[in-house]
Each structure stands twice: as C-alpha cells, then as structure tokens.
Image 1 (cartoon, rainbow, N blue to C red):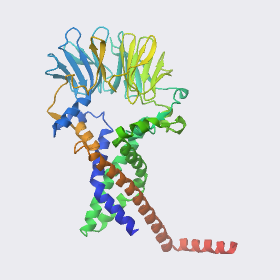
Image 2 (image 1 turned 90 degrees about the vertical axis):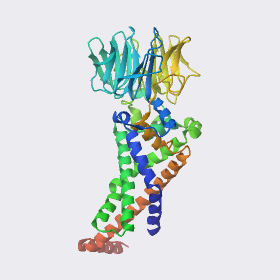
Image 3 (image 1 turned 180 degrees about the vertical axis):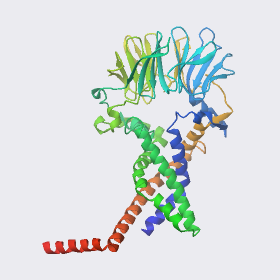
Image 4 (image 1 turned 30 degrees about the vertical axis):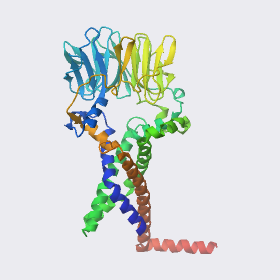
Length: 468
C-alpha cells in the first residue's frame, strides 16, 4: 500500500494541473452552444490564435447583382460588407449556424434564437423565438428547420406559423450500419457516443467535474499533509477525494483518456482508424436511434432529407425515413435540382436527377456554396482567399480550444497531454486499488468492533469445520 500511495502521489503531483486544465476546458467545449463562449473575448496572445477565429464562421453570401455586398455568419454573429470584404459591420450579435437564400433572393439565418430574415437592411426574427436552430432549408415560402438536432419543423414563412412539428424517429432497420473506429472515437470523446439525447454529454460532464475536483482536492490534501495541517478538514478532503462517486467517474475518465490519446494523433492514426470497422451489433444504444443527431436538412417541395452521422435519409413526410446515401452528411445545400452534401470524415457528394456522384477535389467539410464562373465554388474557412471579418481579440471558445489541444503552448504540447492521459490511467488504477483496500480494512475493523459480527463469524467457521 505504501508503494501504491507513493506512485499515486507522484503521478498526481506531476499531472494534476494539466488534468485540471483538460477537465475545465473540455467541460466548456462540450457545450459549444453557450453564447458567452463567443461573446467573451480577450486580447489575442498570438497571430496563430487570432487566425483560428476563422473556424467559427459557418456561412457566406455574395450578392450576384453586386459582388461587393457580402454577408458572413458564424458563432460571433452576422457581419455585412459593402466593399468586397475589406470592412465589416455586425448586424446580429448571437450565434448564427447557417445562411439560406429563398427563391426570391431573401436571406434567412438559422441562429440560437430562432430563424431571422434580413428585412430593409435589418435582421428581424420571423419564427421559433428562443430555439437553437442548427440547420435550415427553404423552398417556396416554407422553411424546414432542425432545433437542437432533434426536433423538425415545417414553417410557413409568410406568417411565421408552424405547419408541422415532429421528433426524429428513424426505423431500426434503417440504422444497422457499421461505424469506423475513427468516427466512434470522436463520438465518444465529444459526448455523443453512448446514449441518446444529452445523457452521453452529461456523463462526460460528470467525468470532467470529478476530474477537476480530484486534481484540486488531491493537491490540497498533499499540501496540508506536507505542512502538517491535519485535523477534520484534511480527513473530509480525503473522504471527498476517495469515495464511490470518484470510482464511478473512472469509467468516463477512462474513455476520455484513451480517446484523447487517439485524437491527439488523429493524422498519423487516421488510416488505421478508418480501416477498422465496428459492427452495429457491438455499438452503444445511441446508434439504434440517432434521434438527436440531425446535422443537415434539405427540402425540395416533395421530399424531406435529413443528414446524420450515418448518412442522408429521405422521406415523403416527417414520419418515415429511409437511408438514401451512406456517409456523414455534415451540411446540405440545394441549387435547383442539384443537392450538394458536405461530408465529415466522409466524401463530399452531389445528387442530380441522374443519381449520386462524388465531388473529388473539394474542401473537406465545406460550409457553404459560393457563385463562380463554373457554377459554384466551396466556402471553407481554411481558404485564405475568402475575405472574412478580422478581429483584434479572440473568443473564450478559441482560448479554451487552444488550451485543450495544446496549440496555445507549442506544437509538441500534444505529447504532454498524452503523458497526462497516461498518468490519469495510472491514477485511476492506483486510486481504485487504494480505495478498495481501505474499504476492506474498514469492513474488518467494523467486524472486530461489533460482537454480533464476531459471533456470526465464529459460527460460520464452526459450521465449516463440522461440514468437513
């Protein structure tokens, strides 16, 4: 036990601060729909982090009649430019997830506060006040919207009234697809890989909160013991540090540590993780429903389509769905009779009246379509040729992301995170062994101090001897 204590203490003292940082930043990043993460800004520590603000943009529009007028939307709001992207003015201060254009040339936005429309130079809400609209499609005065990736709405835009509302209910026989290890690792780490709704996320939150407390309480206990400050306070801290809730938290922490190591080296391990396929029968319960996994939408007036991690599902109404095309459908964009699908860890593809075909040579996870002499081009935040609003401060989200993946410190910091994850595995093992040993000692002490338990134990021994 002395060796376990020393091993546990050494690992905790070395990795405690890093694990606390990973726990806190991971907890905030799991809730990337919180507006304050983007409304809170700080001075940019470096130009590298300032450039990462581009990743927060989600949509882009260029006026075909006047290419100098542009709209860019993202997590920091909706911005407009009248000089080709040289200068920008903010028109909406919330989170914008998508821009869509109606057949009449009107611009609509999916935001964290419903559906908004640009009317006479100003943005005004037209439907779903207070709802987090994560995807939007338009067709002839109708809006097809997804709220919180789980509720589907068909809305009459002329009056803003809801025509139909449904939850997502995909038949189980349309969900029997396997998943690559690459997809599964990401789903587990991002809090969407075990159970439906927010349960997986809450499990991740539970692990993150316990990890932060274990790191903090462990450091305080070590300091108080080193400073010879014992007493009731130290004993209470020890009990809060080593107890059943902490043992239960070891399950999500084990998952986060292992998947975090894989994601730290996603580029090097990518070919391997994509080559390994997990059969559906071995997957957790969330893959039997995917009722909270609507990432993209399309509506052509006759058929509805939703995109999730399995692929594109099509239906004649909002009740019955069938798998039409496999592969994570991150975004969908309609241009007439052509449907463009942006993939996440899956190929980009195009649906035409002649059928589906791949879109080779297009940016991975493109976020919008732009006009071009060839018909369309693809908006990607990694393309420096597209002018976007420039900032002098970074958001709290960008800071948290850079601290979590280590880019805030140095490119090689990923190895420090790996070492901290390995230390966490050691802490979980030694902590569990010490907790179990303490429980056994407590049970033996209780037996010695309770006469009835001693008599019971003697009776069992007498019965065993008699039976022999």
